[in-house]
Image 1 (tube, rainbow, N blue to C red):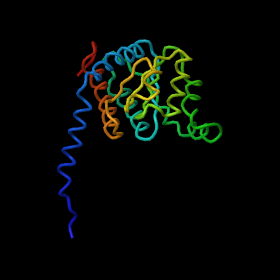
Image 2: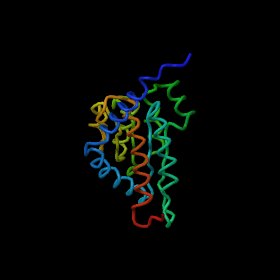
Image 3: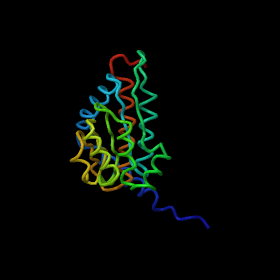
Image 4: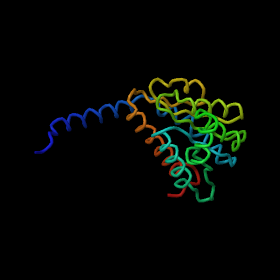
Length: 198
């Protein structure tokens, strides 16, 4: 007996329509105009860009690092120095076990970060305690801060220098757009900046 897939086509169409709607407002360009100068300054000055988030956002943080760190290498050899704080499993689990999960990213920043670095917090709701704590610590250490979020932005949008708030309450659409932002930034920094080689 075959499965009834009669609802699949309308579901796909509805999902894609919602995704398209989440990409339409001018917020995306506005956020890029704020983020790109921070990343370019970090590369120019040899600063580190730290990415962090939970769950799907942790995956996006790691994806940012591999794409921006590798795919944007210029002909002059300049590179983006990128670190995903989610990838140090030993530190994450040690701080979570011995102290508090809300400190798993902020404690790493206290060890690794320097003034002029950039912290990019990713939280679909904008209310992840460990992302908020890391952004607070980043600001206290003199880092520039970026927040990728949705659902109205939560607390994160008011804590960061540049906020990208996806206009959706669907975690799937929010995370889709965050990954698109990763690829958009990577492509732009690879293809359109002076000195870029195609």
